[in-house]
Image 1 (tube, rainbow, N blue to C red):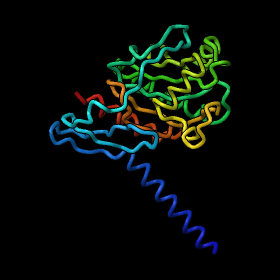
Image 2 (cartoon, one colour):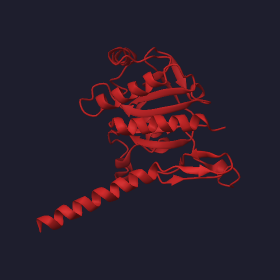
Image 3 (cartoon, helix red, strand yellow):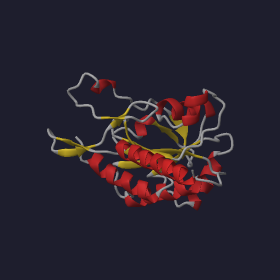
Image 4 (cartoon, rainbow, N blue to C red):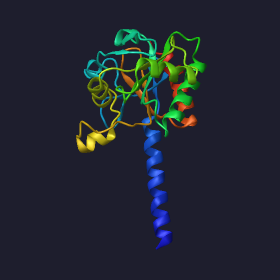
Length: 224
């Protein structure tokens, strides 16, 4: 019986591993002669490769307009990120769990692309009632965050939660329960292309996954 349970757990682990690999599978674009990342248009993060000539190309999911305030008190909107490749995540400064790993791996991305104007980072506070501008500024100082590269943003809780759920698909619990007041806590890093489309989802607590993300940023930089 114990052997059976062990075998079952192993099989589930393999399946989950394969699913994660499928989400990051690349395809070769014969027309452009480059490797291509998929698009993600739904909560289940099913990867889709959609050709520019397809009738579905104009229907690809995009991050909508937003307006928040960053650690310097500046207003940050979608226009600040259009034409840029960026990595988005959700965190809170008082987190004693995964947020430290998320921030350290975001810092790795920041430092790797520090002098690359095409790449930006965006972290949304899920406790905006606590994470004021001054609190975010202190957090930014602690982690060596460069404001020109990485924005920590706060704002109306409803707006942040709606963006997390409907734009970035970053609340698996809400998909199941539909409980609007539920707390959002996600380990996902989302890779967004220059047109505001989701091109990758990664476990932001893992350095290996973060390094894969950085390789994929390089692929996006080669897209026209």
